[in-house]
Amino acid sequence: MKKIKVISLLAVSVLSVSLLAACGSNNSSSSSDKKTEQSSKAEVFAGATQGTNNFSDLQKGFAKNGAWLNATKGDMDASGKTLTVDGLFLGDGQVARKLAIYNQDSSHKITDRYTLTVDKIEVKSPGFYISNGTVKGNVDVFATGFHGQTGTGVEGQATIDGNLTFASQDLLDAYNKLPDAQKVKVTGTTSVVKGDVVSFKPGGITAGAHGNVTYSFEGNGTDTETGATTGTADVSVLKKALGKNGAWLVATNADVDASGKDLTIDGTFLNEKSAVQRTLAMIKQNDQHQVTKSYTLTVKRLIVNSPAFDLEGGNIKGDVYVGKDASIMARDMKGTDGQSIQSEITGNLYFATQEQLDTYKALPAANQFKVSGEVAVKAAN
Image (cartoon, helix red, strand yellow):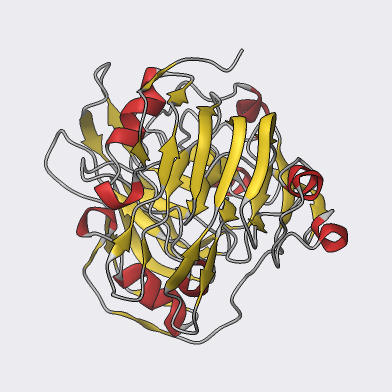
């Protein structure tokens, strides 16, 4: 099912651990609701993507070599057992792990909400969420991005009939900052029980057929050589840093003039909070993270092929093209007066698909650009 994905990003200095778990106010997660349109290869080893009645299959699906999305076909009684969710996965271009406990009709309306009975679920995968049904048992969270998803249809919501615990106060704080539509109903207590928080290193990544993430490299890639994280005004340095072997965070320290040239933002990257992110920062800040100066990048075209790309202040002079697997937004930056400073595109902003355009238009005004030209659907090539 096609759906709007709305991503909320905070400034780098206060980046939330719930990054990319946010979604629109349509009571749906930013991950797909599909249970039957995933890779059929996942069924060969687990049988869980389209739904299973077997707890062993469900556990295989949530293992490190499993799939990003796993589902039950109906109520499942695994009393006394622990479901361990492990590994790093991408779903719909973002870090995600989905437990689907429901059925739906051809219009994607929820027709049944199921119950999975367990002793507990141990969440060691970032971006894990319970979709629509009920987990009867405790849920212990050791990784970032835990949330819930409740769609429309028969009455009910994503529920934990038991206790919800987080391994750190930071994890709980990030969960509490989520909109109500992304929280789960908890019949027991929600608290912190200190434990080992699972983390993953930043770097360039790729995803396999089932969403399994592998690293192209860890760390800042070529940025360790170019110094673009600390800031550059060199076009060749910027081009390298924005490439597939660059860094998730790239910065300029002055205006950059690449008149008549195309710059391409490529690759999928994890930030230091285990979330997919690609950032270009074109500002100078004070110690309170207020913008004291904004820079401008002048190009013929800026072609964005990276998912979850955001501009942290600054302006683009030239046309911006967003590829079919990419997304773009402006960071809500504040000046010394505390007011938002809107980033500008002096040119046109084009998206490869109507869905991407609709997604962008659903963003809060502070996360959109002031565009002098048109905002429309048009491919770069």
